[in-house]
Image 1 (tube, rainbow, N blue to C red):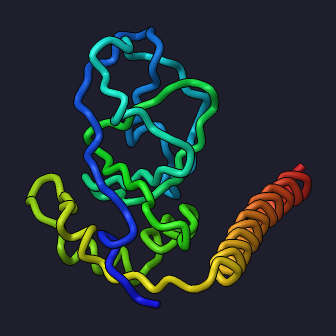
Image 2: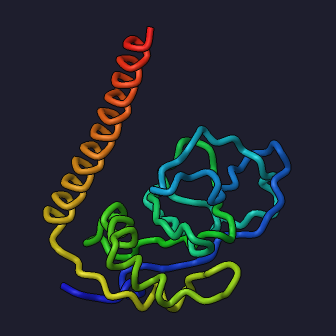
Amino acid sequence: MKTLVKNITSIQTGIFAKPAGSGEVVYLQSRHFDEYGQLLASLHPDLIADGISEKHLLKDGDVLFAAKGVKNFAAVYESHNEPAVASTSFFVIRLTAKKVLPEYLAWFLNSHPTQAILKAQAIGTSIASISKVVLEGLEITVPSIETQKAILQITNLRNKEKALRQKIETLREKQIQQQIMNAIK
C-alpha cells in the first residue's frame, strides 16, 4: 500500500533552548549522532524541566529527522529513563498508524532514493533545510509488518557485514605495515 507520510504520522519541530549544563531533561542535538543516525555517547540531562511542554517530551518510537545541514538522517528515539526533547535541528515524527514500525519509517527516510528526493527539494543556500511540507508529502510504500521486519533484518545484517569488512581491512593494513617494518629491521 502506498500513502503519504502525513497520512500515517504527526510531525512537529524540536524546541529552541539553551542547555544549562545540568538539569532534568536531555536536549538532543545533531552533534549527538554519527552520520548514520546512531547515538555517539551517553547523554546527560542539560536542560531545566521548567517551561518544557509535555507535548515536546520524546516518547519511545518517535522518529527524529535531522532536517538542517548536510547530514539529513532519521533515527528512532529510545528512552533510557531520562526525559528528552529534540532541538530545532530535528522534526519529531510520531506514527499515528499501527501498521508502520518506527524503524521502518527511519529506514525509508534514510534510504538512498528518499534522500535524493529530499536533497533535491532542500531550501537555503548556506544551510540547506528540508521543510515539513516536503517531509509530509513523501510517498511511502507500506508493506506488511512481517515484510518491514525482514527489510530491517536484512539492512541490519548488511550493516554488520560492512563493519566487519572495514575491520578486516584495517587489521590487514596493520599486518602489512608490521611485515614491512619487520623486513626493514
